[in-house]
Length: 251
Ligand SMILES: C[S@@+](CC[C@H](N)C(=O)[O-])C[C@H]1O[C@@H](n2cnc3c(N)ncnc32)[C@H](O)[C@@H]1O
Image (tube, rainbow, N blue to C red; front, side, top):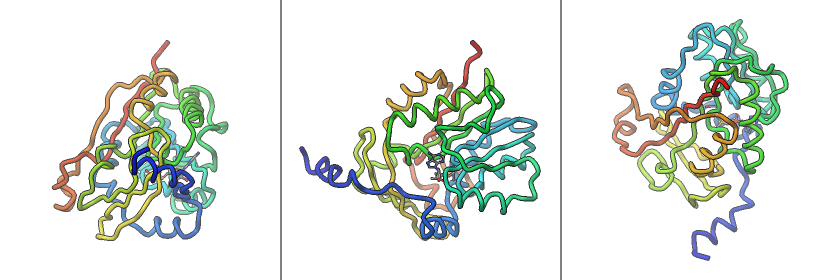
């Protein structure tokens, strides 16, 4: 076993970031994440949200959910396993009459009817999931709730961003292996940093699991920083995020 594998083994008991822990939640809530300069605009651009029914699985603080609601979605449902986040979203976006928020595990979306949605989103959630069987359950639920021809958009951290440190990201113990744990620290808009403990899933495994769930990959995109981003972000040449654009086919 090489030195890195050994470290990873020691770290396998490492805790994955727990959003319902008060400290992490409070800290995360205050921070201005740079997703608004890269991955979120790309997700929003790929949606035709007006009058559509949309599900945001693992919606967290609901920032993206709310931005999509404002685009005129008929309904956008945010679900999250963290009761505290869902309480926060219900309060924060109470003025929006096209959003609903529920506490739920992504592997059991029983509040959503079969084949009732135009889009489902899953952004930065699988990096919390430690078992492959759980990912299969999540994809199977997403397939169940999407209409035929409905679209599934999923984003994750790009593996290439985890392989090299840069002025906006520092990663430790990363191994390109299913289920392995690593820590990654990212720079925020205000120059502060936030650290996450995540789980890695290889692109090969994710694509196999999508295919098995009959969520057909139509396109993969690697969003870069938008022109409005600070120079330090725009100078980064390595893609930080990867977006899978999938479709539930008609048969
Ligand atoms: C990194 S945050 C991403 C939040 C949001 N999608 C975004 O883009 O900001 C991951 C979220 O997934 C939620 N989560 C983790 N495991 C989950 C599960 N099994 N079911 C539903 N939500 C889950 C966490 O509580 C957290 O809010």
